[in-house]
Length: 119
Image (cartoon, rainbow, N blue to C red):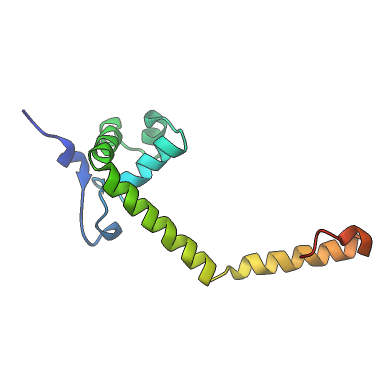
C-alpha cells in the first residue's frame, strides 16, 4: 500500500511558521479547509483558482480531517492574534477615512440630521 499524502503536504519550519501546506506552495491546509468548509467553495474551484492539482486539494482536506482538532486550535490562535493586533494597533487609514466621512457628513447634513451619525 502506498501512502501519498506526504507527496502533497509539506511541513517546513521556515515556511509559514511550519504549518502544513500544499507542497511547492505557501497555501496552508488550514486555508484550504477554511475556503472549503467555512466559505463553501468547491474543491474544484479552489484548485482552479490557485492553480493546484485536485489531488493536492483533496490531500489537504484529508490531512485536515486527520488532524482537525489541532488545526482548528491553530486557526483559533491565529484569529485571536489578528484580533489583538487590530485592537492594539488601529489602522491609521481607517481613522482617516472615519474622520473624512464625519467631515463630509458635517458639510452635507444639518445638526438635527447628524444625530445618530456621530458617536
